[in-house]
Length: 402
Image (cartoon, rainbow, N blue to C red; front, side):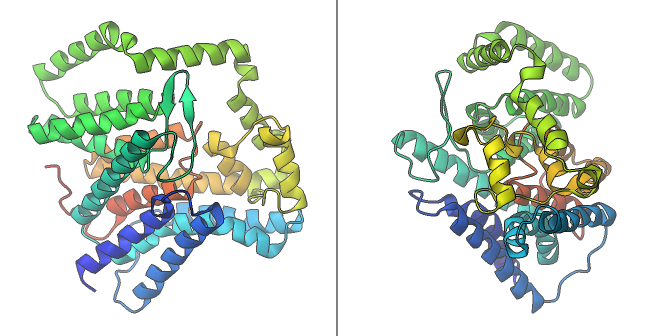
């Protein structure tokens, strides 16, 4: 199989995970999942008839614990919560396949430079989709109508936003090591703008903090101190007066006033619900509950009534509290397994001096306290692509930064 063919197969997986950007919203949730599962199966079958590298140099124990948590969660879903075996399996399949994409990318064994090019192409396509949707808003050309106005700012779907942040970090490190050029300035502005346009506080703040640290770590001598002083001056004099910052500050203050303390914060309540209130016993805390089939089974309907705001629930969603969601679905075992995978990748990226990847993995780990990067299958695919860059065969392949 040629490298070009492998690259096309690799591209098929993340594109199918976003339902090929779902033109005019014609692809519903079930069909979207089917397209993703079918694409993964198709690539896997093709790989069976080709010579592939043996799996090595990856966090075996971490993946083992993660899959153990998924399996035990499935058993508890069926045996304790009474969800049908087939229904429980179908509900689990997208997340199982998503984390298994790491092994597909590993077996494809594409040069790291090609994967990096693929990531850049995906982000460019995501930017084009965002621009088209913004031009034609309130009519949505790609995806579904989500987000809307947020305190005067239009919040819309940005495909592959997690990879936009990765590329921002990539260019920050490249500028720190090789100096600024017109091309790199353009990409820094584009990817920085996409992070800001996400209108997501934790992403904007963490991207700024980690991006600044990344730049300072990779600069030397007086330049480091000059840049640090310049950034501090900008933060004090310019940033507080930017419209996007004013909107985020206003929204934060309104939420703080509405919740009247952390104990009334919806994410804190969600954490308590999914880690304590919704747990049957210590058994489910250790081994997980599996994923409820909302509106399809008795247990699923119960969870839906208690959490879904549209049904009179408290408005608690696992997508808002990623790590608590993993704990609820796959228990202590699965949570530890995923943490081991992420921490091991962080350690390896540091060894390889790929600090832009280190920063990105830290961002994913931290923001998943209050977001769903580790739960949405299309974003899990992005995580597994980075795992491949870190752990894949011939890890020292040149990937763009010297």
